[in-house]
Amino acid sequence: MTTHSEHRTATSSATPSASARSWTVTPEPFTTRDATALRRAYYAEVAGRYWKRQVTEAEIDQGLLDFPDDELVPPTGRFVVGRLDGEPLACGGVRLLDPVTAELTRVFVDRRARGTGGGAALLEALEAEGRALGAGRVRLDTRSDLVEARMLYARHGYAEIPAYNASPYAGHWFEKILTAP
Image (cartoon, rainbow, N blue to C red; front, side, top):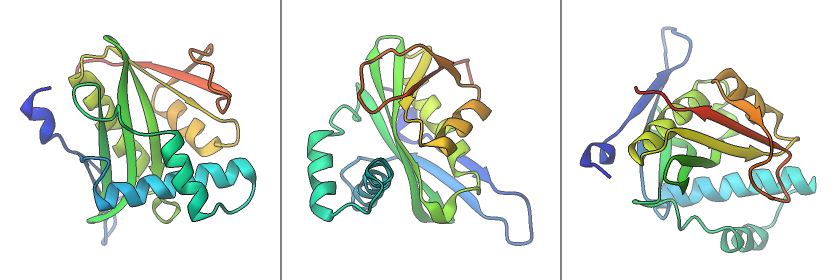
């Protein structure tokens, strides 16, 4: 990984207004306080929606143990944190599945910040990190109940493809060819 990737930043602004808010998305170890809080919030939301109830802290702890983020470090992957006006409210990871295919995971925007451009900023940064890892395409899987996520991916050029993994939690698989920036 090049040192340029160490400082890669994606920014996005919400609809211009007198009090425009802006996103900054940068690589960050998934073990930092902010990254850990966001990963916990991600798991709480996706598990809660799946189980149709609020999850406990113990269930979040177990989920993070069952699905570790160990591959989200160079040279196999990367984790990013998105900040809206400096507040950490989004995260995502990218990891290599093979030398030319990257996979997005843990893509999350806090409910308080949805609709402000955070999803687009995350995708831009994660795709750039995928390119830096050498990937020519990026894939992801998601569930049917995560309607907002599926709409986000479709809006940003991801096409639904046949299943590329056997995840028991996936109902939709997407792919995007990465072009040069």
